[in-house]
Image 1: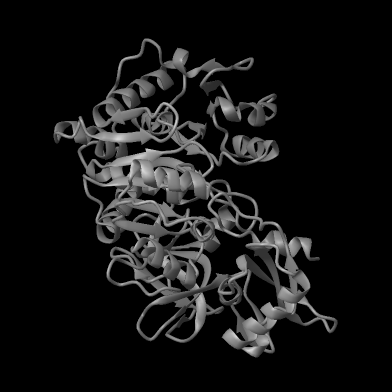
Image 2: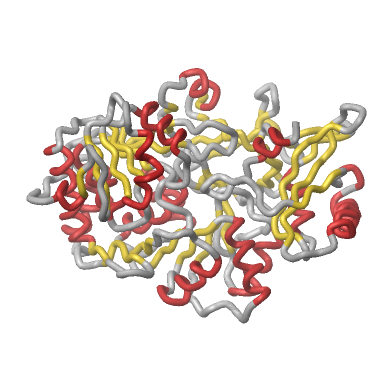
Length: 515
């Protein structure tokens, strides 16, 4: 990095001196279609830093950001870093009690909230002993809050404060695929570490790229896609503050023509299902498509390639590692696998005793790399079991092939044995999704009349098939595809599956509802 070591210096201010001040850093889709150049981003984030300090917020205090994907998000995120404050982007899809818990857990001294989200978070503000400043973006305020325009008025841009590379820069709260979200702390150098590894070696991100991430900025995958990687080279990122439905996404692809599209398996599947009902996909100059959040079923990758003529580079990352560390890459895609380690990372599989295992066996995936979190906030026991020296436990079960590629099997808590043999929920789900009537599937362990574990499937159908007939058909389909003992003994047809904001299926909620 530069002399400062502050990540904002590298990702924002550096571009001015290197002649990219006129490049467009962000462009909003739909609506007013506002845009922000690198010069304006440097200026506005410097003004935001001044405003935050003027408001009485002090270095290293937390500032919760309940902000939609609009231009204000990058301005305020980088503004916090420039001021030496710690931004805490928060999931915009949560309920009031969860916001209350996060605000109190983080002890945020400041809250910045988009006006559309104010009604949900407002009940959590009363009686909070830590909040001193509440800023509302957009029209509408509440008692004890101030408008963003008023907050920013009359400020001059300040340079980024000096920061150490290993100084805490920001927090992210984990998506909660296994339960209560945890505060994950990241340091300044972690951002550049992901740009130098995945951004450079897998994406090959370029200054002329236009990136659209359907995954939102408030979690690690979206933050890397639309903040870290484009800003590492002076490229452009598209921002959409609405829900990324297949219709909305296809409109963005047609109108804004991104060269890199970042999605999640659920969205890829839903978009393909939409295309089955309609005409050909709109023309788009894709250079790359990537996927994370949950393993991508092989048939989704194959169908996407048939429709768009471009591979989906499936990979796996985590909030704890900040972005993707295991991935397929251009010219080296094997559908149904998570690929190989991204240059700059090391991975290994271990059994339940912690012994490293080789190809053909199923074990927990551990990863080592410079982007690892420094730990969870106020959860020492959990930090000690997740972060083992330089290695981070992912909680994911994988199998490594003889060729060194990794095949996802499921979360550690999701795996179970049938007749003494490990069953991967993801393998059964892939088999079910391969049936033309199935849109989505989730598999858990359920006990039969003898108290033995057997697979149970929850299915979302594409249409209105004969349910009694489709259940028997799916059971036979799975038996023929992957094995007699792996087929789901029970099938529940449901309208949708519980998911995190990243698209991860929350199987623990299905297990809880099945007790």
